[in-house]
Length: 299
Ligand code: ATP
Image (cartoon, rainbow, N blue to C red; front, side, top):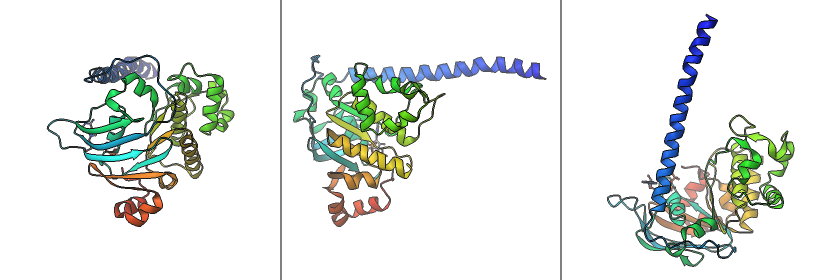
């Protein structure tokens, strides 16, 4: 029986590998298609190599209209708001209100059809794409930790970062304690087949990775996963500290983030419904009050 089971294992294992390989190939092809789509964006100015400036940049949306296809209803139908350089601005609103689309338009993954989007006082269409992307940091909602060491995870987007940059990014994201407790410090394997990090730790690793690229504007889609009190506090401290140095625009899913924000933009069905601080909005906006009551965990 054991021999039969072993035979069965040897028969099935390569099929598993084949399936895994096919899935990886499919993911690779999808990524390639996405790169081609981005490369094909119309009217792309030729990109000069040298980035211009390193100061924090603000964002302005003025009457922005955007639909994902000519036959689709607009996702943004006259969206206007302003994010001054530096500080923390939060985007909140029900699922489907168009918050992630704001990020996609700032990053120029899509072109808006009408209105104006400015980054750093400059029409987003006039930024050379390479320079724009170099100025932006993006931290996705449930950021993956790749197989490899923690150092590799942090440096893959900023291979030229110095040890000092790395140490600073770890301190700013409160990861220094975590690193000190790992068996091989930064050389510890993490992710799949390594030390598993919690949702809050993964997001802080992603923030550290983004900071190493010295972004002039950090776009942060806050983790929706439940965090314990310590991780929630750490994330709040980290966001506040980063916002003291650069512009942070966060899609907020936590009350603790919005209560700390300098301003909150409340989005609803393709428009901006209200802008204010937490205290102002609690007093003036019914939808905001409802979102606050449900802790923003609405998506
Ligand atoms: P959530 O909090 O659920 O992420 P959101 O406020 O971020 O919502 P968006 O993700 O910007 O909202 O989506 C707004 C609308 O646009 C939704 O109806 C969504 O289905 C649609 N949409 C988003 N991305 C695409 C896409 N790539 N192609 C077509 N439609 C899209």
